[in-house]
Length: 341
Image (cartoon, rainbow, N blue to C red; front, side, top):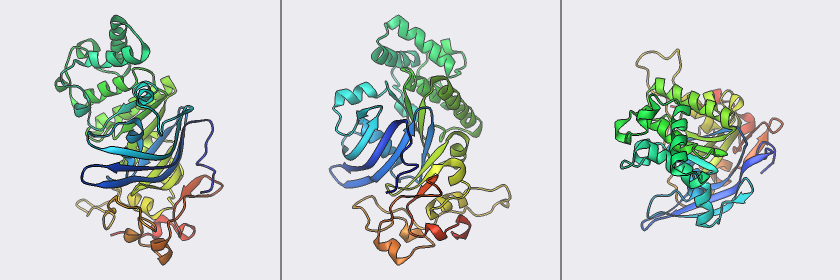
């Protein structure tokens, strides 16, 4: 792999050749296969791809946030602010989770504790990671609900998650995630379950909090509109591999990889006729079992060659290291040339 855009300094987070195998009583899977990327302090990196591409496992398995009964085996390196997370003891991960790294989960209703009031859930993080007294933590909880622009924050402190709307629950989740002023915020599909108006409010809130706290954000999403509105760089994942990586304004406008091209071609357009058919990618992603010998996208790619089927393309830098792509035919590719059903 050529260096260039993959090594940005100073790095808050540096992931190098990371592979993750998951084991259950029924199956062994590899949802992350040799991924490298970096995140600088204060920047936003969006990680995009279809469901099952490995985005969530990539970010949560290193923190020990896997469902009960799932064992994760990590290989490679994850350097976070000078601390190696691969192989780190649980006490180290416990200190980092909720402290230096905040997390926003896709479904706040399942992430929030239904038996605790919102104020107590926010205050607990401040007590644990900042060492505040109960009264100090409760005062901070009120300040945080104001910071995330919660309506009537004093009343919300006393409410339970089921008493809040979806947008308010997401704001409560964000307040918990930033309670210890983390250096990095990992947001997993933070706007998926919200209507368009509330989505815009949450994205605006995240951008405002980032400026105030100088916080880096890793945004996990499938929504290219969200990517364009908040991220500075984007990493595109497919079948556990990174297939394209670079500045948002470059990747979304002139993508190099045919998978990225297909994702963009599938987006609704202003000139689409009413009732027009959805432009989806043909075929389905591969199952995440043993690593494939060639390009994982080959069975769905309109530009596939014999080399694609047998040789795994490395992630290479192009255009003075402004963008990287893992594609054997990238030098002949324009996204307008890729015809998808």
